[in-house]
Structure formats: structure tokens, C-alpha cells
Image (cartoon, rainbow, N blue to C red; front, side):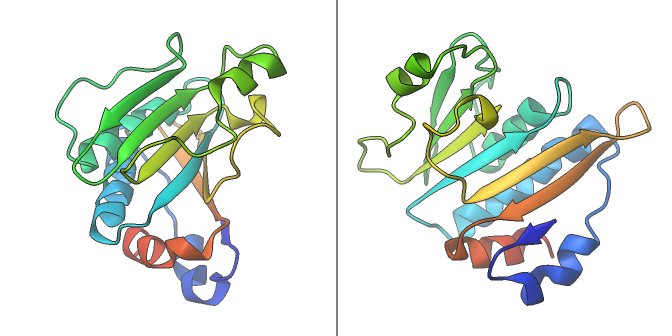
Length: 173
């Protein structure tokens, strides 16, 4: 795990990132990040969720939305491509690009620009590599890899933005 511009501050926390041993721990990993976003708001943020099928990206997103205080049902946007959740602090766009086949489809989704909204937003983008280079760059990248145990997930976090310093400090402590 690495964080540009914050290597000294977060080096210990990132090195000590532990495997997630259950679905509940993966959800809690997302929940804690969302709480930190709510406690140290930034105008907007783009988070890439990477990993193989079944690695926990949507489970992480469900926990994240729970942490944002969203009380409704959270579903995978595999077929709808984008689900928008209005929370008390942010509009969260949960995006799944797995079924995208062409660059034209990506451009039509307009993920290369910020949404028109008076509220701050967060993009949670699953399968971002399918949208490159036509989507906004990430502030944060979260890679979830399958572990050796059946429910184990290995998280790896990369920060690409200084604006998330307080959020990462809160999340990874």
C-alpha cells in the first residue's frame, strides 16, 4: 500500500493493514472509510474499487454506504451501471463498469467530468480499468485480492490526492 505525499505519515498504518477475514470485516472496512469522509468532508472524491469477481468490491461499497448513513437497500449496479445514493453529506455514485464493452459507452456515461450537483459527491467505481482513460482519475484506489481462506480478502490502498490526508489518517489508524 502506498500514499503519494503522505508516505511518512501513513507508512506504519499502511504496512500494518491486516487481511479482512469475513464479509462483515470487508463491510466494516468500507463503513470506517465512510465515517471518516463524513467527519472530514472534502468537496468531491473518486474512489476506484479493484479486484477479481467475488473479491468484495460491492460488499465494501455496501459498508461504505452504511457508514454514510444510507438506510435503504444497496444493490450491485452491474446491470444499471450507476446507482445514486443521496446521503446526509454526499451524493454517492456507485458505478460498475464490468459490462462496458466500448469507449462510446463510457463517454455516454459522462464519467470524465464531475456531476452537475450542488452537493459534494463521491464516485465509487468498480472495474475502473474498463473505463480508462475516459473516467475521472482516482483520489483513492482500493484493491481487494482473494486470500488463501474462503472469506479472506487482502486490501491494498493507494492514495493519489493530498486532500484525503485527514480522511486516511482517521481510516487507517
